[in-house]
Image (tube, rainbow, N blue to C red; front, side):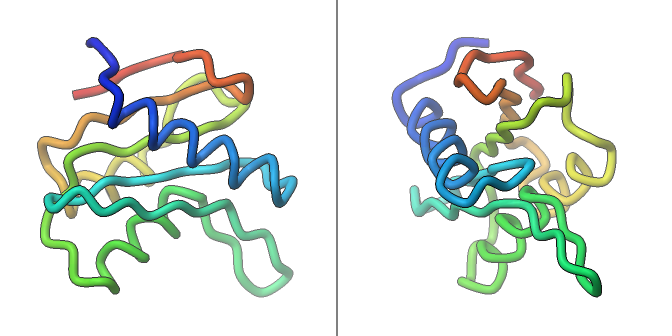
Length: 110
């Protein structure tokens, strides 16, 4: 799957958030209007959320009705089932990109 400039943008946003906060993961999603939402994983004693869960929740709480694409920057090789399910709940046809911390693409799911 080719990565266009808009997809590169959400990968860059996910990388930047992860680097800025030192979080395990960074994620970004793009909604049907082109708005982007960037997030990192949350690891508190009483609250643990993946970066994709936070990004999807931000999109939903801002009124997004669909997702065009999602990006996850992580040391893992692929996106977890629960993260993919969250993306698919809002954007059944969204492309999902998984990138390494250096930004290199590991996987592209459609």
